[in-house]
Image (tube, one colour):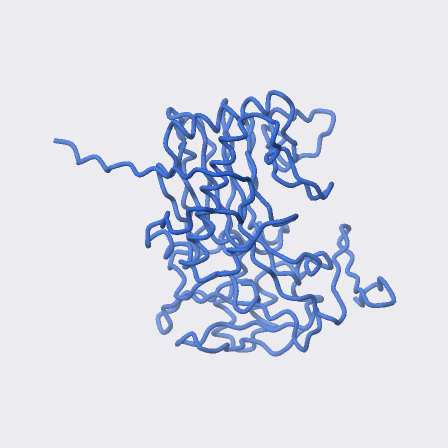
Length: 405
């Protein structure tokens, strides 16, 4: 006799507008407590059957029609085939890359086709955005992040349809970084990504073993002992791994505006009772430490206590040949999520490294986006800028100045 079948739970919320901040179903609790705890401790929450098959089919049909009619934008972020990661413009095939139907186009500072009142299945997308608005409100309450539950506008209106063509993939990354490691632009926006989410819209017969397209995540082997992501606006930068004498995985946060000056930094963790900050370092300059390439430069010059220093690992080390040579963080474990139609995934945008494995011969469809929170006010002092060519500059009232070597 087979195991009893789990009763399917579908979410269906009607809507009257596209704006994520406008919702009529905030009283619904859409996620189980276990999903909230997983996000809070740095993992990925996976909720199968979040949308009913009929809703998945309707949204996929809308996305497919809008892609075929030329409304998607190819972002060229996903590598594909044998030339994955290569910038071969002559051989670039847009049908094999990632394309999006966004709600907002930052480069044009205007609403995108996802919220168009005239394109495709408008009612179907309105219904989806109402469901997502209810999810956003639910997460704001259950995660203790009231800043999530704010009206949308401009850059923080991030919801889209996404399509990965056959062979497309997306390299390992995290979705948000501390303002101080993003250069001048890091302090220029009023909000930052807080929660990443996707709802897969693939056909019911999608088989990850033959069709690929899994979301590969890099969770901690020991879940965080404290809530992840940020403290009082200070974003997480890394981890202190557990030891026999201190078996807790501890998130490490960057205070990047000491004395109200950008570039004046210190690292800290939570006290055991979670009531205060315990600083691991003295004050240091972001330039050069945060632009160096391995855990070593934090473990040794910055954290003077050797036993604590050896426990430090970046969330995501700066990419270099050296970090590739040193290999994986032993505190991580791989968790793959199949892109099964109707499945919702959600995780902290700062904390969880992830990638998309290559699709095989089929198109991979999803609705995806980010819920934002307001970020810290911009410091009044100097600002570190990392030039695209890798040259460090500082910014002051007199303009750009080449940083000292």
